[in-house]
Each structure stands twice: as C-alpha cells, then as structure tokens.
Image 1: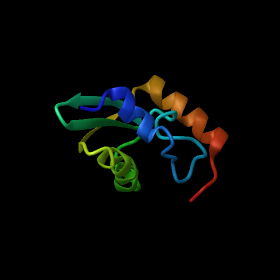
Image 2: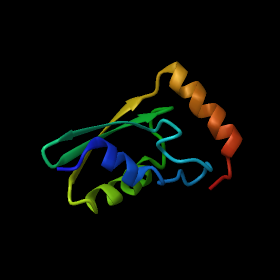
Image 3: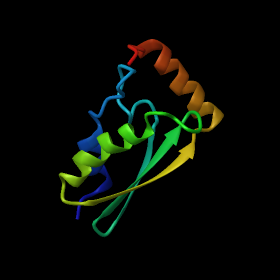
Image 4: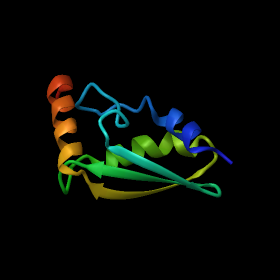
Length: 97
C-alpha cells in the first residue's frame, strides 16, 4: 500500500497550466486520504465552476494511477485565507493559457 507521502511526492511536480507553480504549492491539492488501495484527493478551488477543473483533476490522476492505486476526488472551495494565498501566488506566477 502506498503512503500519503509517496502519493504527494508523485504529484508534487504537477504544474498549473496558466500559473508557474504546482497544484500542491497553490493549495489546489488540499489533502490526500489513503484507504486500502484508493487515494482520494481533495481539490480546493478558489472559485466555483473553474473551467479547467477537469484538466487539473486529470493531470493529478495520472501519476497516482501510475502507482497502481485507484484515484477518487472531491472538490471544496478554498477558505478566504487559502484563496488569498492562491491569488498572491497566481499574480506572481501568471503566464496565461
């Protein structure tokens, strides 16, 4: 069975397509819950209905499934504090789509 740390390491390099930063550093990957052979990734979104959410989920699912572990996900909205951190990092690393 893979550990949370191993899974986190496998996705730590997954970059946001429009921001020069990883999804982990941006706080979009909020948590990973590992039970048996299933990793559930909690995605925290700064706003509802992010147009690229499916792309972000797919980009995280691939390295996890490459570890021979099942992938599930949930989405939540960022807290105001998380959103402020995200917006700061977005402004610093914006490269556009």
